Length: 177
Length: 177
DNA sequence: CCGATTTCAGTAAGACTGATATTA
DNA sequence: CTAATATCAGTCATACTGAAATCG
Image (tube, each protein chain N blue to C red):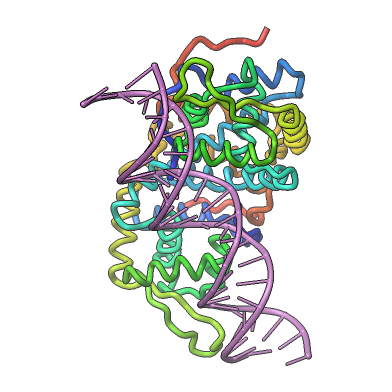
């Protein structure tokens, strides 16, 4: 997970942009942005994984656990979770297996549709969710060098990207009251 | 690679932020930024992988190929490549194996230090590098919804993040002349 | 019979650990 | 002898495909 940490003497992205321009391969703004996204995700992701690992969680497991934690009845069909987390059905099975082995969730049969199975978060799962969330927050999700305004700018830029990629449907912004 | 594509009715990140605030778990700006980074990388990464896959390349292989393509003599020691690409030595071995199998690079012995091996890009490798680079650029690296100014803003924000994480050493900005 | 839901078996790429051979 | 370099064997988490079982 993550990548080897070696401090480089020059910014490799700036260098890639320079090379790109020298060959006349078109505007490098999007190249630099794409490369930056990859590195930034690795930075934030590595920090998150480092926090989660001693808790016995991976990113996938943590995401599923939080999804269940915030669900209305602490319980969701596996298929719904696959949609929400945007992962394959087989990956859902794997992740549910892992979390169930850890006692953080349990599989419960759907009362009416006997094809479907639901996952339900356990008390231990709730405790774990609160603990991992608090630890991640205390670590500022690995991006604490950005202040709140910069983080907000980042979110706004990336929201346009996500919207353009069809990640979700545009809707009225809901202010927390 | 990538994740299952299902258009959601609401922005899952906005929802996570709302849940976060309701529990009083502190300022959600960094949460939203971290989640956005993950999704954005997935969007750009999936687009890149979709372009590279029909060429027989993965991200790792493509990065190594471009590194060699832009190197002064088309040739680098494996260890140096590991530093530059920030991957483990064993991963370098794997990637070099794959590219060599494809005839895009060859292993050449180091003339003086017989411990080290160098990878050299072949003519076929150069053609492939130019082809994959051109195709990725034509695809705007999967982030074409952003205009050049937005891409530049993104790069600037993420540069601060990378710098803070010790990705590279700050140095004088080099304007392309 | 058709389609939805979940699971299983198997494959692949990647990151890692630990051990090993070679050589500076 | 010690450190550096590269490789190998094996493990792990993840993503995927194709097939199967169950059931509406």
